[in-house]
Image 1: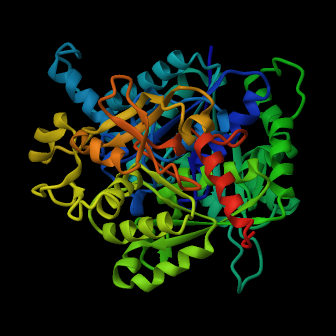
Image 2: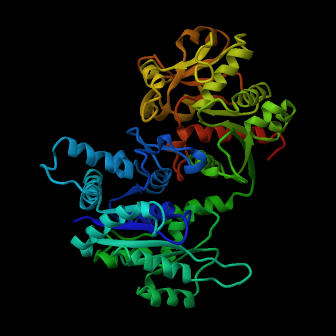
Image 3: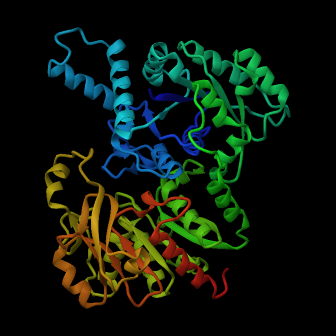
Length: 547
């Protein structure tokens, strides 16, 4: 019988439920158990694909083509496994399924109600995901914060599962303990209220993960335990740290995995050797004494007065993984592409970066600024890595400034343009015309064959690869000839040679653009081959005086 751990949030959003969920999975996996994770999002959206990255954060794409919440990326990185569509659900997805079943008479004429049929559907999905992943322990993160109306049905499903299988279900409340500057004392009252709010949904937490600026002292732990009706040992301190990959190590300092196994009546399945792999990773991270300046040119940065790095969280993590593999610390700057449109003189600042990345994105805002930045780094031999849109814009820049196609553009910018070097995928024309944007892109993992003379082949070390996609537009095959004649290398193609997956400028230290998103497959212990190669080239550039 599988065991289930529900992770819920209290006090405020953004306390790190996703990292906590992933880290709990990591420490239980180290005990020898088959572990997977599910994300329950309270949005009516059927998937995360239509959400604005500056409001919701990155859209993470799975191997099987699901557009999910960014926490799925954390699960993959920490568990070192691929998470599939069955492990992600939204309120919209659940309702859509129930309504479809009702229309197909699958409820045998019963009156279909929000309760119990929506919670039953949620439970069915949890059990299906557990079965498909062959998990012994499934960890389920419920999005939002306790007390919000939106996640009540997910909590109700969790309560029903607990009621039916008392010994197989546990609850972890991730909460926050503020230290008001004018008070100077860590306050437990918000957490006490969060526990009672969860109680009002019929749920008693088994563990409380206490996030704060500093570690919890015994006095606060005892106060939460007493007022929250929990054992003292089940109050877990989770102080702020510099690196999320240290979280599993911190959890084990409090013997969290043993406490969970004791709750379930389980024992470690193998001799527990500790989190050696994680400890080695942290040694590598902390021993890096040199910094490498990387510039990211994009538009999904600002929300009000704040910079939302969550828009590109997988790119950031992939840069970190590769830097740590090479023994350096990443020093990342966010460079607004619109600034380069307004003032071309600012392009000179790109010379202070060891390498430059243009990540994925949609729309026309800031595009000409990105193209100017790409031209500058190409001409000044600064290592460049273009991801998805970054590959398409690099192709346009090359077409304009090397091939002489001065009007080269993308259909996304001007659907009536004469020189559409980047054009709509034929099967998407009707969808775009009808404004049907949900789940209509080329999504998920697709095979790619590498040119053996390319830097990409050297990075991967193999000819056949598989990478994840999320786009509607492709390099227009009508322009392949002129691009190749002028020196652009089509370094990777689909097996049928119809789609260009990677472009390179051979006589450049590193100028690579990928139609896919390599960042989605980067892992902390190994990095990604192309990011590793990019960082290596950036380090060689930095050795000229910047490192």
